[in-house]
Image (cartoon, rainbow, N blue to C red; front, side, top):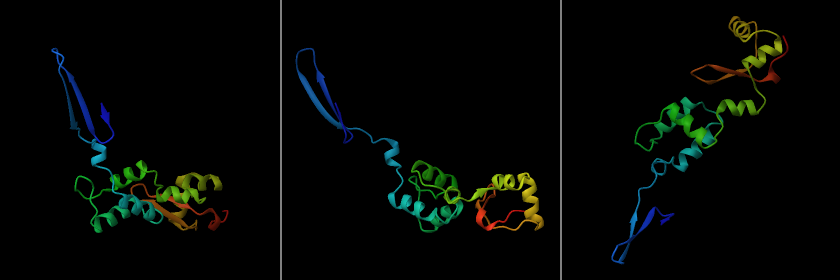
Length: 149
């Protein structure tokens, strides 16, 4: 018989008719042992409004937060925690506000994404954009601040 407090009751029946009952603790599931502290989840939800995974990782480490194993946070840990707890990334928050991707912006102008990047680099295209993911350099554009070209 198992109850919710990680205790199991064992009932033994012997051939001679005797019975014995033992109640013993059982190990907690591993995921319970490594559960992310509530203050880290709240921190990530609050800071994801303005910061990338890498920036939040640096902030957590600077403030002395540690992973359950006692190690420093890495961007992939922050990404996984946010995914597990349904916390939207900076990129998703911008997309939810109506910002558009490089591909969508290129389609708006009838050009390829590569051509759009070249125009930005050459100074032929001026518009507000933000880099939200350091690894990929994803650019998002505020469509209200970009005129048709």
